Amino acid sequence: MSEIYTQDVSRCMAEVIGDGGLTADALATARAAAWDVWSAMREDIAEEGFPALSIAAQADDLGAIWDAAARLSAHCKTVALLGVGGSSLGAEALCALAQNPAVDVRFLNNPDPETLARFRASTDFARTGMVMISKSGGTAETLALAMTLMPDLVAQRGADTVADYAVTITEPGDNPIRRLAARWGVPVMDHPADIGGRYAALSVVGLLPAALVGVDIAAVRAGAVEALKVNLQGVVIDAVPAAEGAAVSLALLQSRGARMGVLMPYSDSLAPLVRWHRQLWAESIGKSGRGTTPIDALGSVDQHSQLQLYLDGPDDKMFTIIAQPLDGRGDRVPPELASHAGADYLAGRTTGDLLGAEQEATIDTLCAHGRPVRRIDVARIDPAAVGALMVHFMLETVTACFMLGVDPFDQPAVDDGKERARARLAALK
Image (cartoon, rainbow, N blue to C red; front, side):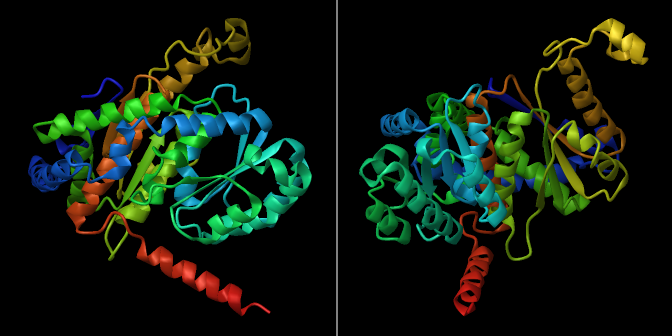
């Protein structure tokens, strides 16, 4: 198992949590199906047939990413990232790791007029830059934001220096956002044509914004490589955490009716990673009436907003807790204040002690109520850990999709909605 993260599915078993868990036979059946899929996938990955993962081992593209980030950061205090879905969620997950970013990356992914007005009112355009991301180059939201913001930015900063404060990322070939970039003189970096948007976090799509805020993007890829290595080297399924995770999830769906999966970390900096995972899983597996619904949660916030439902509502969920060592970390509660407040249990305890106790208590109470819990432990929340988790969840998602017989890389229903939105716009007077 990886030194960066470990996975424990024992609390998903009936022998541990009772009737809400899996029987050994149910898990064995799912494991056999997962192993058949994984064996075929492993050969494909070894032959670089999964570009979203093989890109993690590359280094020759990092220089161009660092150069672009350095150019933008030298001329900008704020950078607006225009992108939606896979063009922004992975970048947000990585940017959340920044400690003291010199550049404020603002994610504008929803063309809400009020949000745009607040951005204009609070931003000094004389020190603002822009990164525009669309794999296809025709994403309506990104185009609309680019065409309303870039003219003002060019007017404020000057057309002769656009290359200092703007970058476009899109796939090769003629498309709308490339035409706009050419009109404004904006440099273009290629979005890998063979990597879908929701799988693109380890490419320039996720790494350029991360580099802008000072995240070690080489460490992100190093963690991704380690997680991939661990999964590829496993000779039995319980040594392949991604395939094991897929097997447990689908076994719980098929034998226990667990149609939802709750992913709940106890680190604020992992909350954007959970939103990235929500798109990855939902858009990949939800087809032809199949799949499970991903739910994002955050401890301790959702102990106070969702846990009642999780414990005492419908027994139709699998829970994954991303845990970390927390004891002794953070500020310490002064004993005299705790005593005065009548909260002696907090006296001398750190904020990490409290959060760690809640983390373990939530796992315990879910199990006590017969709810299946997978535990993923990370030694620390850093770029390598997030890179590793991204690879784990990508592998797990693709394995589960193939087990259900759905294509993990398309999104036909989403495309239908896009066409309907365009038709409505065309019909407006």
